[in-house]
Image (cartoon, rainbow, N blue to C red; front, side):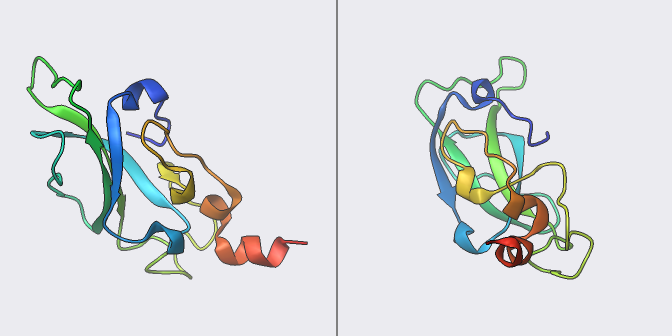
Length: 127
């Protein structure tokens, strides 16, 4: 899923757990993953690394067809800006990228100048 999540997608989020300190990251990718549990660390099956995830409240119900919960996962891929500052995303960002400083339970996260252009660009363009 893209960064175009709505608050209704996240209505049962109770807490965001960060596995890494997000303050040093210009952006994180976010997606809704289907997991067996609502309140433990979800499995991670992508390249790269998981940097955070959402835990759901007691009122969250699994999908009636699959029995799985939809939970937000935050991750970075090996070619993202934090690992390759002069790489593909030196400027710009992937579509599902949001600024981790704007993420909170039940808040979809937002694109900011930092997430889209990088902290170096933001720092050099400040008055």
